[in-house]
Image (cartoon, rainbow, N blue to C red; front, side, top):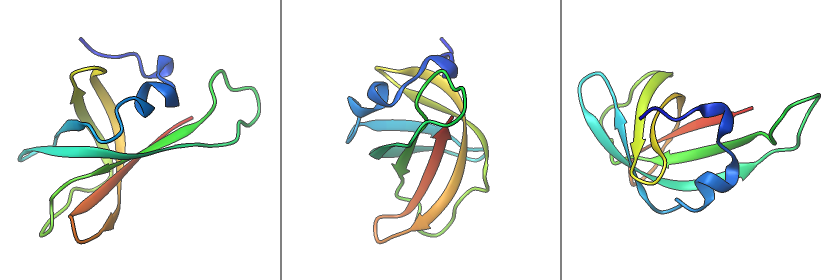
Length: 100
């Protein structure tokens, strides 16, 4: 079942830090670990406090462009999230999603 993104909050993801997520890229389904949830200051008239998540993959020799991808996690369900590749470290590529 698809998750309503507008209902998700930082605390929904905080409980999933260090847990695995599946990211459905065009040519593969990659396992990614949620490594960080960052709450941001609210602005204007937003219903929820903005936040971002950082997912760590093991992709060392390639990455995917920023786009909307399906992400699945047992506790949270399936969701369509706009991911941006942000850094390649010794473990692999990291992707960030911002929820505003």
